[in-house]
Length: 227
Image (cartoon, rainbow, N blue to C red; front, top):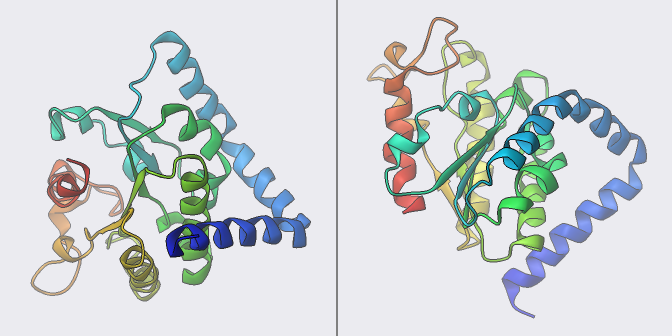
């Protein structure tokens, strides 16, 4: 058994063991994620009306993905599919993976989540572990699919969390370096100004969500990983 395959198997078994050892936590996650059931059902309705492209580049995650309405124009010639929902967390993406990832057999999955997790009190280690479980889940079903983690962005509204944001980003960067099917897309660095703070022109009035200028940076950074 190859090292990467052994690592996938070990991670998957660890996830199963975690769910078995902490049934209360698993039930709590199910209850939390059910909050987004209506959003996921809307995706399924849309798929029944018009079949989505298979083997496309799938974007999943929280509202920074959900609000990225210019995907098709930003990546011309690349079939894309947006399945961002609500103000979701990494654990929500994992919970709904069988419904928002598996059916599309994507060649690449672009993930942006973790921002809301930290704001809701989760530790950097927990966010990185949830991403590790998500990767194991994706590769169990789709072993050849590439997974691109978009670094948690710096924002005006959540600058108080910057130390935790940097910690998650560093943990995932190390994970990506160990598996050629993973990639770490650094949007954190180019979203900072000369003063080392988030650039104001990249954000709308809430200081959290992005203007077209913010998405232009994301497009430039992500493009090499999906073409």
